[in-house]
Amino acid sequence: MKYLLRKVALYLLIAWSAITLNFLVPRLMPGDPVTLLVERMQGRIDPDAMAAIAESYGLTDDPIHIQYVAYLRDLLHGDLGLSIGFHPTPVADIVAQSLPWTIGLVGITTIISFIVGTGLGVVLAWRRGSWTDHLLPTLTFLNAVPYFWMALILVLVLAVNLDWFPVAGAYELGLERGWNAEFIGSVIYHGALPALTIVLASFAGWVLAMRNMTVTILGEEYVTMAEAKGLPRRMVMLNYAARNAILPSVTGFALALGAVVGGSMLTEVIFNYPGVGYTLFQAVQNQDFPLMQGLFLIISLTVIVANLCADIVYIFLDPRTRQEA
Image (cartoon, rainbow, N blue to C red; front, side, top):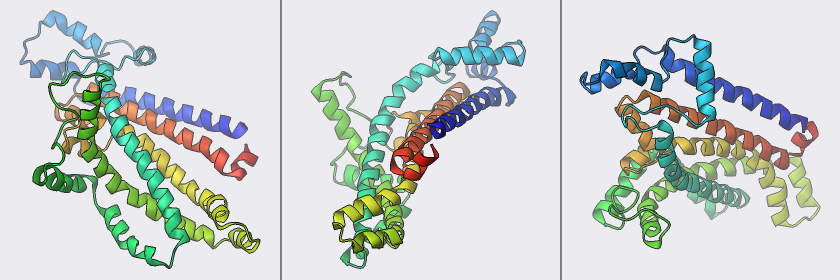
């Protein structure tokens, strides 16, 4: 329990640091959102409204510590400021619209890739020296293929040439959004090709990492002792080899889950998929600093939470951690 409390305290400190940096960086950068907004509107803003706009973006002449307290208070109320590119839409509303798309696409495909990859990695390690070793060059090639290149190839072959899938978009335009069969079917159909891209480009890495670690574990004395005792092969493979070999992959999986909110930006851009990655791309294009600031904060906090979850899982997977706790 002490181990877990120390970890929670550490991650709370890291989260506070990320929030503080998110507050300081925009204020240390040259320029401000109001000036950028005025330039975009070619000066067609009433000077009397400038002060109100500056206040809406959190730009005041108050001392920095007062601004910091106001910033934390706004965060507690879910206020991430106003977007420039989508002015006057709140950043929180834009994030709330894009977040479900990324979690639904990248989150599910990341979990599928991890489960399939680690499971196949254990099997390939257990059957090393057989015909399954011929799969390694193909897996190595897939692991080296960038997401965006895989996406472009699949779009060209499956969407353009064969016309099996739509080229872009998250659903068919004109449909009423809601929990109805037609809209859900359209979302699944449009998300199939991006999902296939992410799975093909990521699962090979899990396979290779899990296979190599399992092969190393299989050479340990306690695994040899378990085999010498005549324990069932399945028990040795799962309880002795796979359980210990998966520990490094848990950390990688936590980082991958944390990166889910950031989304596979290039994949979302290629498919014009309205997730967090595509929204971040639009924010960079539009120089929408408040939106970028809000997205970076959400991404940072998600990575922190994912790593905390990984440490909690470690407690159940590694008895040595429980003894320390």
